[in-house]
Amino acid sequence: MNRQAGAFVGSRGQGIGRWRWLTAPFSPRGLSGFALLGFFLLSVLATGLGFADLRAANTDTGSLSAFELTFTVATTLFVVTAMMVALHHLVAGGSWWIRLISFLFYLLFAIWTVGFGYGFFWKELAGQEFTERQFEGVITDLSGSITRTSGALETSERATADVAALASARAQTEAAEGRTCANQPGSTPGEGPLMRSRFAFADRAQNLGAEVGAVWIAPVATQRARLDHQVSALVNRAPPPASLDLPAAERATLEKLAKASQLPSAERRVLFTSVHEESRAFANAANDLRALHANAFAGRLETLAAEVGPDPKRPGSADPARAADPGYCWDVVLNEKLIAASAQLRSVEPVTTPEFEFLEGPKATRAAFFGLIQWIAQPLGLKFEGSRDFVFDDKAFLALFASIAVDLGIVFLTIIRDAPVRRRRSERAAAGQGAPRPPRLSSILGEKRR
Image (cartoon, rainbow, N blue to C red; front, side, top):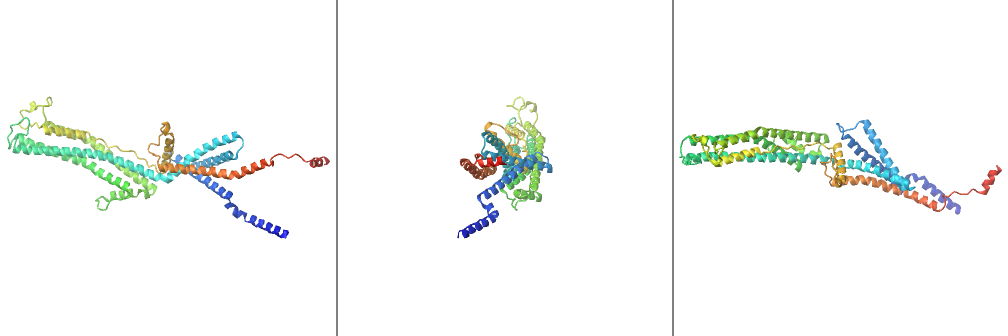
């Protein structure tokens, strides 16, 4: 009976041992080893790609050569491996100075892996969105600048048009009733030099207003409408309505902007860069128009104002040098309005063009990396070049958490896997299994007989 039981137990043990290769990977130690290997590979991947992106961002092509990529991979592999070795010695115990050195080197390598791993995770989570948001901000700022310029020009246009309408009305009043000039209060209605000068003055004012609108204001207003459509397509993620009358090329650009997030990176780069270059070219043209026409038109308005103005030396009285001119009319209202319109034209500000750099890919990773450094150093009042366009938002926090979680997973699994080894070692030490045994007398006598 005992033999049968022994045989049964022996056969059962042999059966379990036969399938151990299949069951061992699913044991707690096997699963922890598999998870630790996975975290190791994930750390190598995230750290290596983040490090590669940071190095590629400093190149003209945005990519690394085969040798540089091999060097990056090797460096990352060595760093992550050294981090795990330092962690193992820290957890396994030993003398205090070994544990202290292991902790310092683990901390150094962990900062390396967390920092570059953060860049990788951030690029995957928000790199494309960051570029789109940055371009949207640039175009919005440019559109706002042109809107302000266009608004100032429209105000000047209304002031000039109001002056022209007032001049025409005063000319008609002079023809019908007379007495519209401060220096000729007794003028009578009807045909005469004063009435003819008043109508001629009104014609010049109207022609000047029309010229300002045609050569300066209309081109700016046209580009303002184009930029408004581009901003609307970017922000609303919707193409322009079919009812809007637009050229085919402009409509195609707006449709691409509406679905920019779905375009390949290379095509998105071409789209954003071309739109920005086109907008900057117009901004330069608008500034050229301002430089060409602002002082010129303001000077012509001031010339018109002088025709109906007072004595230059005594503003409160008529010009005595023109007292003999039957067409001279001192019109206080017209003079003030013309001078105000001239000042408005001179006050039109130039269009400011924000800079734009396509930061998707390695350059976005670099911006995120320096943004992290700036966020850490901000309480100290330090500033770093390269982080001015980056905002440490919720997705940046999520990327940093993911990078830290990888290292925490390695720490946890290392502690779990080393715990049984430490426990068995302490049990053997408590049982005296680790102490040296004295030699037996029989063995000593046996050696002497030989």
